[in-house]
View 1 (tube, rainbow, N blue to C red):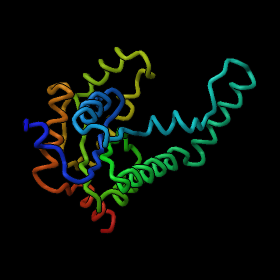
View 2: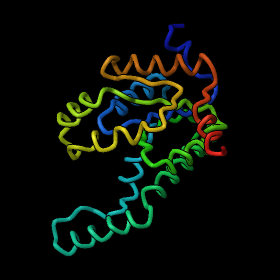
View 3: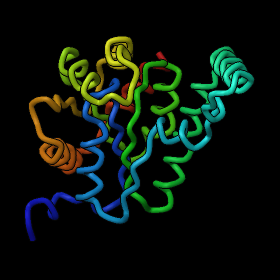
Length: 205
């Protein structure tokens, strides 16, 4: 048995990868899925947005653009983003209860979404991982991707990491995706994660 297989969890786990745009979440999630195999599901906020399309489909027609602009405003005014985070968290719990390892790409910049994640996941075997390359590196990666609005990394970087409490913090500019996956699986084997429980405890104080 090789080292990688020895590190695989023996019961379902949740791995929350929390980071700003272009922080290495997706490549790390792919490396984890390769390690964990068919019993691993990768999901995240972007998947919920793509599936539910709360703003409707993009369309060049004037009426459709106007309708989409209205839907965006309504989404913001009615806490639509928070509702989608809560939906994501419910779905992750359901997958975990069905026996899957779940890797979640997320960006918990709203403390209410962070607290909802803590409440739902703290009693489960959930490793809370901060994906935190230096901001200037995230901005370089963001510029190279060409499929995201420029400026998202800087806009959200400090909001996402404001709570500063993780089971593990990684700098993907210093580690390959496979190395990040190894560090995550090693952390899961070392001890039961506690960061989300500590966040829950802080909420009650």
